[in-house]
Image (cartoon, rainbow over all chains, first blue to last red):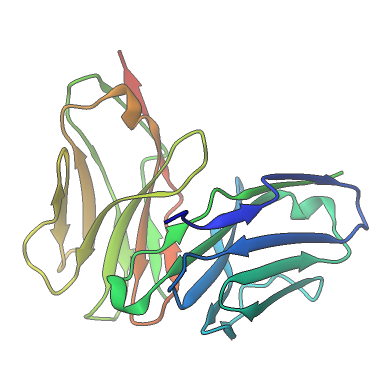
Length: 114
Length: 113
């Protein structure tokens, strides 16, 4: 299995631009999670999906952030407009409820907003 | 609310020696899971070990073992025969019946040759 795939690995953009992060979960996993990691706040859950449906988005910082999962093999996290404080590493993770509850993480996307 | 506390921001260990990383958590649940994740400089999050709260036996994975004290809400990680490749950030994490993982702030482990 290829594992969780994220793209891009690095993204540098200017304040005010739209940013789209992409994730392909492990095939057969029915839960997908988006996390953000910063030095100040550590690892935070932003949102998670079950069977492509958003279940808990209480961690999404504000309306500038949105996430979609149009099908079982693809999800996006969009920031519009981006701000310097959004600079962080964004992780996608997936799991299969029947599989022992381990979350498998992607390699992360390092976002820098100038 | 669930919280996970790692009180050691940094630890160091001599190669081949043993080190223990501490973790405490707060929960009102009786059924939950605890994890230790390793994050090397590549930043990939790698599961090290998992413990189910209903199991009294401490989990072990090769050189990694845990000391799970449910009453004390403590979940420490012991690394035996430390290797240079063990150098990383280590995160303790908690998961209850929902699917949210709550992470501690991490412990940076340095392995001294």
